[in-house]
Image (tube, rainbow, N blue to C red; front, top):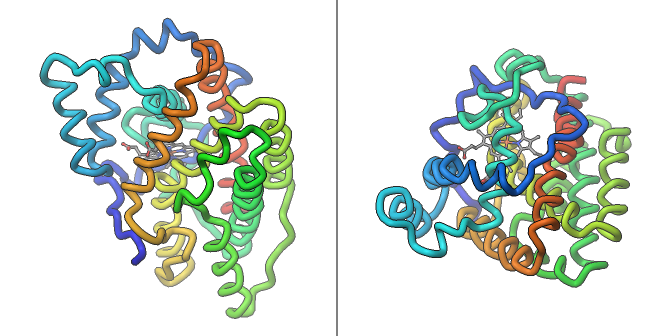
Length: 281
Ligand code: HEM
């Protein structure tokens, strides 16, 4: 059965903005992350609205009592999320810290052709990520096979549906091609950076991506719900399983490798932001 996990109530379309272009590099030293531990915990509390009851209980306990050892240490995926959330604008997500530079989603005027370009380039990115984890040039990527989050087949069905409606499907364009090429390169030579992109692409799509999909469907698709936004099975559980695998894989990394992974988040926003903007092209 397709997941019906509700969107977080914090999601307000009237105030959503496209992600900003981010500066070339924001160093995220580990000392900074340690100082920000309190905000990481509050992130987890807000995140709990979209997660399983089990995680909710753990997070509330961490915030209100002496922190259990596991929580006090902070899981790596929570660091990944904290860095990503700061790269949103305040209007996109309440933990966002970037200054808005682009129009809010509510002001978007999407076109079918622009949306098709976005879907085609997104498919190229998911095809690439899914082929990389199958091939697993670094053995740890094999952990991320068959997570249930895969989007390639769903996008294939959606593009077939558009074709049946008489639309012609464009070829992939430069944002998708550049991102796919970059992911291929990273996957061979920089596993920490690759894992950062893997996390951001899949998790962003289940949060802001779904909100955007819903809005665009209301505006130009007569509310047609695309397969891209439906998951077979329990989405919360699938996300939680992937979080656990991310933590497991990162547990063998040095602090420097972890920081390197976190520093890659900006690039993930840059590449995904360019693909998102295709909706408006
Ligand atoms: C218009 C663009 C975007 C909007 C409106 C948006 C909005 C949001 C919202 C509302 C959340 C959930 C916050 C919460 O749980 O309280 C979220 C989570 C997240 N977003 Fe975005 N976002 C956008 C773009 C991006 C981009 C480009 C990336 C990176 C590629 C990204 C990465 C993430 C990640 C990693 C999470 C955490 C998901 C989780 O923990 O399950 N977002 N976003």
